[in-house]
Length: 273
Image (cartoon, rainbow, N blue to C red; front, side, top):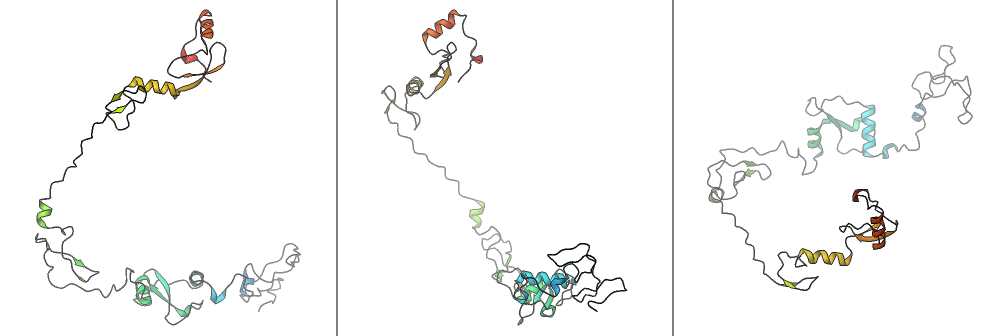
């Protein structure tokens, strides 16, 4: 009986009614009201059987929560109640009843029988699986004239018109039309003025701007596209110069002084800013 002593050991039975003896409190805890040496009122977690937790929704629980409860407290046997075969089973709600935690409101059915019983949507794989129309007689020949029999269309419940891939005529499949080559229009030759020297020339590319490489290089030098910052090898001042010129001095005087001092080291040892 709940609350009775067990065998004179000073332990009481769990107050939830499970009949198991509780443990002894090993230390005082004022927040819980525990006193060292006394027996506990409930076993660990058994107080939720008497007083439901605040998150417990009862019969208003969600679909997944109810099925989780059924799987935990009512293990499945693995035998379908409809066909009697040993297959993976589910709990199917009996028609006309509401979702609850009562095991008697459900039937243990296999996946196939479950879908049949619930009459799930049109796109289900098992929808009307047992009511398939079985074709009778010999299949007709393909309409393209090849003489190959056509397959059965389960969705339309009728024979197909063509065999797989024979929707074209036999003549088109055997003698396909030659592929038409793409005809490119000849590009019109037009003259334009060079962006550097201004002379008229006929470009070979649509994005050409200069009549020669010399004009292109002169245009880049004039705009300073290839200019970089360098450190003078004599005085150390920073100056701007074209990266392809090989310049290492900021002025002619620095170049002359470096030449009198014995010349500059190779370019690989130069220090660029």
